[in-house]
Image (cartoon, rainbow, N blue to C red):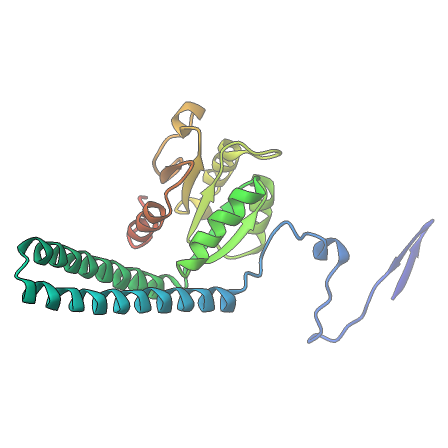
Length: 233
Protein backbone atom coordinates (compact mmCIF):
# COMPACT_ATOMS: atom_id res chain seq x y z
CA UNK A 1 0.00 0.00 0.00
CA UNK A 2 1.23 3.51 -0.78
CA UNK A 3 -0.23 6.52 1.03
CA UNK A 4 0.79 10.14 0.49
CA UNK A 5 0.12 13.18 2.64
CA UNK A 6 1.76 16.43 1.59
CA UNK A 7 5.46 15.75 1.12
CA UNK A 8 5.30 12.47 3.06
CA UNK A 9 4.85 9.04 1.52
CA UNK A 10 4.16 5.86 3.53
CA UNK A 11 4.73 2.37 2.14
CA UNK A 12 2.89 -0.51 3.83
CA UNK A 13 2.57 -4.26 3.34
CA UNK A 14 -0.84 -5.92 3.19
CA UNK A 15 0.31 -9.34 4.39
CA UNK A 16 -1.87 -12.41 5.09
CA UNK A 17 -2.75 -12.89 8.80
CA UNK A 18 -0.41 -15.88 9.15
CA UNK A 19 2.67 -14.00 7.87
CA UNK A 20 4.55 -11.99 10.54
CA UNK A 21 5.79 -8.53 9.54
CA UNK A 22 8.61 -6.98 11.59
CA UNK A 23 9.51 -3.31 11.42
CA UNK A 24 13.21 -2.61 10.94
CA UNK A 25 13.46 -0.50 14.10
CA UNK A 26 12.22 -3.49 16.12
CA UNK A 27 14.62 -5.83 14.37
CA UNK A 28 17.50 -3.46 15.22
CA UNK A 29 16.84 -3.60 18.98
CA UNK A 30 19.38 -6.35 19.57
CA UNK A 31 20.21 -4.98 23.02
CA UNK A 32 17.14 -6.76 24.41
CA UNK A 33 17.91 -10.44 24.23
CA UNK A 34 14.46 -12.00 24.05
CA UNK A 35 15.32 -15.34 22.45
CA UNK A 36 17.80 -17.26 24.64
CA UNK A 37 18.94 -20.62 23.25
CA UNK A 38 17.28 -22.91 25.80
CA UNK A 39 18.23 -26.05 23.87
CA UNK A 40 21.91 -25.07 24.08
CA UNK A 41 21.54 -24.38 27.81
CA UNK A 42 19.94 -27.77 28.41
CA UNK A 43 22.75 -29.49 26.51
CA UNK A 44 25.36 -27.63 28.55
CA UNK A 45 23.64 -28.58 31.79
CA UNK A 46 23.33 -32.23 30.71
CA UNK A 47 27.02 -32.32 29.79
CA UNK A 48 27.95 -30.79 33.14
CA UNK A 49 25.88 -33.33 35.09
CA UNK A 50 27.49 -36.15 33.05
CA UNK A 51 31.00 -34.88 33.86
CA UNK A 52 30.21 -34.59 37.58
CA UNK A 53 28.72 -38.08 37.68
CA UNK A 54 31.73 -39.53 35.84
CA UNK A 55 34.19 -37.90 38.23
CA UNK A 56 32.20 -39.07 41.25
CA UNK A 57 32.22 -42.66 39.97
CA UNK A 58 35.96 -42.50 39.27
CA UNK A 59 36.70 -41.09 42.73
CA UNK A 60 34.56 -43.76 44.40
CA UNK A 61 36.42 -46.50 42.51
CA UNK A 62 39.81 -45.13 43.59
CA UNK A 63 38.62 -44.90 47.19
CA UNK A 64 37.47 -48.51 47.17
CA UNK A 65 40.92 -49.64 46.05
CA UNK A 66 42.60 -47.46 48.66
CA UNK A 67 40.27 -48.80 51.33
CA UNK A 68 41.16 -52.40 50.46
CA UNK A 69 44.88 -51.62 50.68
CA UNK A 70 44.40 -49.88 54.03
CA UNK A 71 42.55 -52.95 55.39
CA UNK A 72 45.41 -55.23 54.36
CA UNK A 73 48.03 -52.90 55.84
CA UNK A 74 46.04 -52.32 59.07
CA UNK A 75 46.80 -48.60 58.72
CA UNK A 76 44.33 -46.78 61.00
CA UNK A 77 45.33 -43.32 59.77
CA UNK A 78 44.77 -44.25 56.11
CA UNK A 79 41.41 -45.82 56.96
CA UNK A 80 40.38 -42.63 58.76
CA UNK A 81 41.34 -40.53 55.72
CA UNK A 82 39.44 -42.88 53.41
CA UNK A 83 36.28 -42.68 55.53
CA UNK A 84 36.53 -38.89 55.58
CA UNK A 85 36.73 -38.84 51.78
CA UNK A 86 33.74 -41.19 51.56
CA UNK A 87 31.69 -38.77 53.62
CA UNK A 88 32.80 -35.87 51.44
CA UNK A 89 31.75 -37.76 48.31
CA UNK A 90 28.35 -38.56 49.81
CA UNK A 91 27.83 -34.88 50.64
CA UNK A 92 28.87 -33.87 47.13
CA UNK A 93 26.46 -36.36 45.58
CA UNK A 94 23.60 -35.09 47.76
CA UNK A 95 24.32 -31.51 46.73
CA UNK A 96 24.50 -32.54 43.07
CA UNK A 97 21.11 -34.27 43.37
CA UNK A 98 19.61 -31.16 45.01
CA UNK A 99 20.98 -29.02 42.18
CA UNK A 100 19.44 -31.35 39.61
CA UNK A 101 16.07 -31.25 41.41
CA UNK A 102 16.20 -27.44 41.52
CA UNK A 103 17.02 -27.34 37.82
CA UNK A 104 14.06 -29.56 36.96
CA UNK A 105 11.72 -27.41 39.07
CA UNK A 106 13.06 -24.12 37.74
CA UNK A 107 12.82 -24.75 34.00
CA UNK A 108 9.69 -22.66 33.64
CA UNK A 109 10.95 -19.74 35.74
CA UNK A 110 11.76 -16.55 33.83
CA UNK A 111 14.33 -14.04 35.12
CA UNK A 112 14.80 -10.52 33.71
CA UNK A 113 18.33 -9.13 34.12
CA UNK A 114 18.79 -5.36 34.07
CA UNK A 115 22.52 -4.59 33.87
CA UNK A 116 24.48 -2.05 31.78
CA UNK A 117 27.87 -3.80 32.08
CA UNK A 118 28.07 -6.29 29.20
CA UNK A 119 30.53 -8.65 30.92
CA UNK A 120 28.57 -8.81 34.18
CA UNK A 121 25.32 -9.18 32.25
CA UNK A 122 26.64 -12.17 30.29
CA UNK A 123 28.16 -13.75 33.42
CA UNK A 124 24.94 -13.47 35.41
CA UNK A 125 22.85 -14.78 32.50
CA UNK A 126 25.18 -17.78 32.06
CA UNK A 127 24.97 -18.70 35.75
CA UNK A 128 21.17 -18.61 35.68
CA UNK A 129 20.84 -20.47 32.37
CA UNK A 130 23.15 -23.26 33.57
CA UNK A 131 20.77 -23.65 36.52
CA UNK A 132 17.87 -24.21 34.13
CA UNK A 133 16.28 -20.76 34.28
CA UNK A 134 14.88 -18.84 31.32
CA UNK A 135 16.69 -15.51 31.04
CA UNK A 136 16.08 -12.21 29.27
CA UNK A 137 18.70 -9.43 29.48
CA UNK A 138 18.34 -5.67 29.07
CA UNK A 139 20.90 -2.86 29.17
CA UNK A 140 19.15 -0.47 31.55
CA UNK A 141 15.90 0.36 33.31
CA UNK A 142 14.36 2.02 30.27
CA UNK A 143 14.79 -1.10 28.11
CA UNK A 144 13.50 -3.24 30.99
CA UNK A 145 10.36 -1.11 31.29
CA UNK A 146 9.82 -1.38 27.55
CA UNK A 147 10.21 -5.16 27.72
CA UNK A 148 7.74 -5.44 30.61
CA UNK A 149 5.18 -3.34 28.71
CA UNK A 150 5.21 -5.84 25.83
CA UNK A 151 5.62 -9.20 27.60
CA UNK A 152 4.24 -11.28 30.44
CA UNK A 153 5.55 -10.48 33.91
CA UNK A 154 8.74 -12.46 34.72
CA UNK A 155 9.15 -14.42 37.94
CA UNK A 156 11.91 -12.08 39.12
CA UNK A 157 14.03 -9.10 38.11
CA UNK A 158 17.75 -8.90 38.94
CA UNK A 159 18.50 -5.19 38.94
CA UNK A 160 21.73 -3.21 38.88
CA UNK A 161 21.52 0.15 40.68
CA UNK A 162 23.82 2.47 38.72
CA UNK A 163 22.83 2.62 35.04
CA UNK A 164 22.35 5.27 32.34
CA UNK A 165 18.94 6.65 31.33
CA UNK A 166 16.83 4.82 33.96
CA UNK A 167 18.80 3.62 36.99
CA UNK A 168 17.80 1.12 39.68
CA UNK A 169 15.99 3.50 42.06
CA UNK A 170 14.01 5.07 39.19
CA UNK A 171 13.05 1.63 37.88
CA UNK A 172 11.84 0.46 41.30
CA UNK A 173 9.85 3.66 41.85
CA UNK A 174 8.08 3.39 38.51
CA UNK A 175 7.38 -0.35 38.83
CA UNK A 176 5.96 -0.08 42.35
CA UNK A 177 3.68 2.75 41.24
CA UNK A 178 1.84 0.40 38.86
CA UNK A 179 -0.67 -1.94 40.44
CA UNK A 180 0.00 -4.86 38.07
CA UNK A 181 3.64 -4.98 39.20
CA UNK A 182 3.05 -4.67 42.93
CA UNK A 183 3.98 -8.32 43.55
CA UNK A 184 6.88 -8.51 41.09
CA UNK A 185 10.05 -9.95 42.70
CA UNK A 186 12.88 -7.40 42.38
CA UNK A 187 16.36 -8.25 43.64
CA UNK A 188 19.15 -5.67 43.58
CA UNK A 189 22.56 -6.89 42.35
CA UNK A 190 24.92 -4.05 43.13
CA UNK A 191 28.15 -2.88 44.78
CA UNK A 192 25.99 -0.26 46.51
CA UNK A 193 23.69 -0.93 49.43
CA UNK A 194 20.18 0.03 48.22
CA UNK A 195 19.43 1.52 51.66
CA UNK A 196 22.03 4.21 50.88
CA UNK A 197 20.01 5.06 47.77
CA UNK A 198 16.73 5.44 49.63
CA UNK A 199 15.31 2.09 48.51
CA UNK A 200 13.66 0.03 51.23
CA UNK A 201 13.51 -3.75 51.39
CA UNK A 202 9.89 -4.78 51.28
CA UNK A 203 6.75 -4.67 49.11
CA UNK A 204 7.32 -1.00 48.20
CA UNK A 205 10.97 -1.49 47.29
CA UNK A 206 13.16 -4.48 46.57
CA UNK A 207 12.65 -8.05 47.78
CA UNK A 208 16.34 -8.72 48.41
CA UNK A 209 19.90 -7.63 47.71
CA UNK A 210 22.92 -9.48 46.30
CA UNK A 211 26.23 -7.64 46.73
CA UNK A 212 28.73 -7.60 43.87
CA UNK A 213 30.78 -9.62 43.21
CA UNK A 214 27.95 -12.15 43.73
CA UNK A 215 28.51 -15.75 44.80
CA UNK A 216 26.74 -18.01 42.24
CA UNK A 217 25.75 -20.76 44.69
CA UNK A 218 24.26 -18.29 47.17
CA UNK A 219 22.40 -16.47 44.39
CA UNK A 220 20.78 -19.65 43.05
CA UNK A 221 19.97 -20.96 46.55
CA UNK A 222 18.31 -17.68 47.56
CA UNK A 223 16.29 -17.47 44.35
CA UNK A 224 15.23 -21.08 44.89
CA UNK A 225 13.87 -20.30 48.36
CA UNK A 226 12.32 -16.94 47.53
CA UNK A 227 10.62 -17.94 44.27
CA UNK A 228 9.00 -20.95 45.92
CA UNK A 229 7.40 -18.69 48.52
CA UNK A 230 4.55 -16.22 47.96
CA UNK A 231 5.73 -12.63 47.66
CA UNK A 232 4.83 -10.34 50.55
CA UNK A 233 1.75 -8.32 49.79
